[in-house]
Length: 437
Ligand SMILES: *[C@@H]1O[C@H](CO)[C@@H](O)[C@H](O)[C@H]1NC(C)=O
Ligand SMILES: *[C@@H]1O[C@H](CO)[C@@H](O)[C@H](O)[C@H]1NC(C)=O
Ligand SMILES: *[C@@H]1O[C@H](CO)[C@@H](O)[C@H](O)[C@H]1NC(C)=O
Ligand SMILES: *[C@@H]1O[C@H](CO)[C@@H](O)[C@H](O)[C@H]1NC(C)=O
Ligand SMILES: *[C@@H]1O[C@H](CO)[C@@H](O)[C@H](O)[C@H]1NC(C)=O
Ligand SMILES: *[C@@H]1O[C@H](CO)[C@@H](O)[C@H](O)[C@H]1NC(C)=O
Ligand SMILES: *[C@@H]1O[C@H](CO)[C@@H](O)[C@H](O)[C@H]1NC(C)=O
Image 1 (tube, helix red, strand yellow):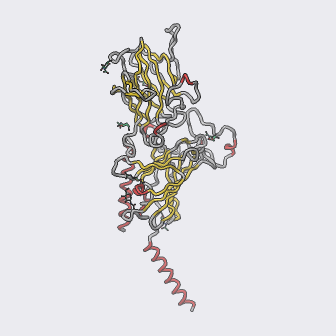
Image 2 (spheres, rainbow, N blue to C red):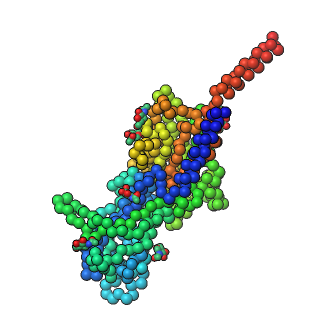
Image 3 (cartoon, rainbow, N blue to C red):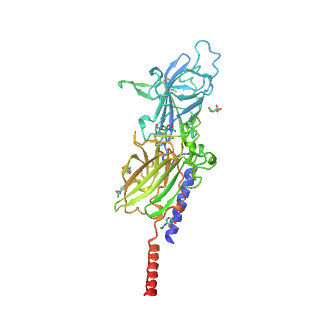
């Protein structure tokens, strides 16, 4: 009775936590995560300026996947882009009033994308030309940056007359980001390429963009299933975890359509082609409590891709569990503890090992990756009761996954109950003995 009460209290707390985390625009596991777009004016020109634009992804575990970022903004006056290095505007717009030297883009709201790798050197600058793919800060800080250079005309030509661009929109690659206004900040100080002299931008402004899952979809994009060695129940993902609106378009795993050529070709709009499941999620995370040793315990985590049209590159998985402060070993994934609030060390990120399993393949026989983790028990907190061994939160690629309802978690068989059964069995045997002897 007491245990049941405890359990439902715990369930209510978990539910409340879930509700609150859904309502927040910021991510409680990465409270300072943001993408900062910095414009450094490196020279003034007769009719404008040249700026190096640098996009830094300061999010611990959310990267920008292929097909990459798209950045647009609105000009404050009648500016044009004379030329760009390391990126390009998707449309030139109406440049008919220019004779001779024609600008690269005359649109009031230019939209810019990164160049593909392998462009000639004279069209590159540092950190450009990665097809818009930007790693997360936690996984690979050196690759968590993207840059291009833009030469702007018909604008102010000094820090007194220049007008900052407005209305920044970042797609990465889909919706989710909201960008604030550009703000003038202290000028960036650089080292010259030979690292022997410091120079300074003539003027610098920043734009900060933050992510909210609610802007992407009202449904989660991944779900969690649970199992344990101490109970045969496998708790599957909840039905329609990711919404069943598109169930009519899904493909059964044994369908002949899968043999058709081009079935795995990604589409421009990134619309997934899902394997039919009752949860209809592109990604499922399975958490299995595998072994209980004397001093340690072991968890197996498997990630399965159900999207036939997408390979996940540089995927990340974030888990929150109170025992992650005592991770002893992580097999076949890389692991990094995340300590957003300094004092609480219950969150960590997992990601694939380079060239081994950092690519989660499209749905099918190879569409999964897995790990096992060994955790050292803290005698004061470790328990198999009340679903303690299951995760509190799971994120895949920065999106929170749907956990099943806590009251359905596989529970530790009640030993008192078991004894009762064996006692009644013994009683039964005794009765039988009396009957037959
Ligand atoms: C954006 O990220 C940077 C780097 O982590 C951090 O210094 C800054 O405080 C963040 N901004 C906000 C508003 O969280
Ligand atoms: C503008 O530039 C001048 C020198 O070129 C500098 O003295 C001044 O502080 C700058 N003003 C701003 C707002 O950056
Ligand atoms: C802001 O940008 C978006 C997308 O580029 C555009 O649709 C919208 O009209 C712009 N709004 C303003 C006020 O410029
Ligand atoms: C995934 O990667 C494999 C191997 O690189 C490739 O053959 C396949 O076409 C890719 N699938 C998608 C959906 O891009
Ligand atoms: C957090 O836990 C990890 C083990 O998972 C440990 O290596 C790390 O030192 C801990 N960090 C803090 C700040 O306690
Ligand atoms: C678990 O980790 C915490 C903080 O990292 C540490 O204080 C504690 O001693 C560890 N417990 C065990 C059993 O190693
Ligand atoms: C396993 O867990 C389920 C779900 O909580 C529960 O209904 C069932 O009784 C448990 N099985 C045993 C043998 O205790």
